[in-house]
Image (tube, rainbow, N blue to C red; front, side):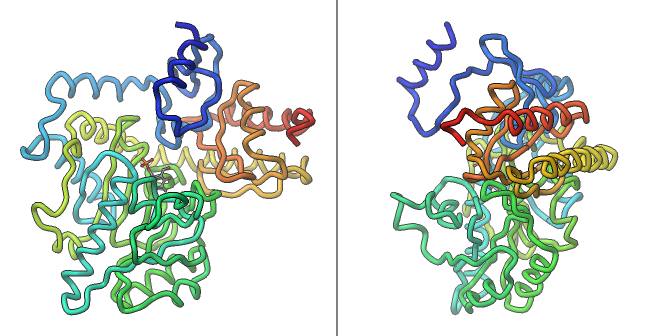
Length: 404
Ligand SMILES: Cc1ncc(COP(=O)(O)O)c(C=O)c1O
């Protein structure tokens, strides 16, 4: 089939929920992707923060093959070997006492919302706590509970009425959160680095203020580290840079090397309120997924690997700040942490992403004026130089006149 025929097939048969560029990706190797016309792209998207080790990683492939030849799936009616081993790893490396496995980010967020409410009912039986405080510009996924707690009205449009009991405060404005707390609030929901919303890191004062507030008022603190967790910001979990621990945390994207996984980690006091039958997922804790996640997590947790991410991050930020100095009229800000970076531009971010693709580099957006870089964590300085020099070329030569 030709590239055009594949795209025509997609247009005819797949529900049109995405706007895709007119290329078809066929294979990947290291930090590069190749399309059906043989064109090579430097990947600064990583399947949206998923492919930490790039493409064709030999250890990931070996693990998938070995586990798939033994056992793929039996459901959660039975014990299997990889799931408890993965849970042990996650718990021993984090604040948590327990793990719940599912299949995607949004599903882990739904689990977190349910667990918070169950805790609110069991801990305060005479007057259950059930309300959430979420943040403007947040993003927690596309299922109904997730959109209800996502602070971006564009994701609510056409899907109301939403899950009741959600109020929105402002990132890094502790007073705006305090003003919303009532004796019915069960949890405060936060991405330590707001990702889709524009790459906005929380301040240390804000997260420690939230922790104190939750402890004082008997509420849970929930971190969504689906995009910013698991090495992306240069530490295994983003919260470790803040010295603030949550009561629940969701993880997903890179954990199983590109296979679908979601995890909700929780403290024992919350786990004590969840009983058999309260929640489930047929594919959750799938044997191949969990075996692969053990492999991936063990490598992500390696301090030398994480130090390498921080070094590469410094190089990327250094180069981007240099670019900002060269083009102050076009780059307004460079922000983020580790290898999640938002570059705020005076041009439309979508047009810059197209210009990147025309020059064989894949980038994505985080809002109308933010170009987002999410390279594989194994990126090397020479790849960073290539992407930044491509950016320089775009800004120097300009976009086609009608797009500026
Ligand atoms: C912070 C955050 N939470 C939740 C999600 C939803 O994850 P998924 O697309 O796997 O459902 C995303 C996806 O981008 C995310 O970035």
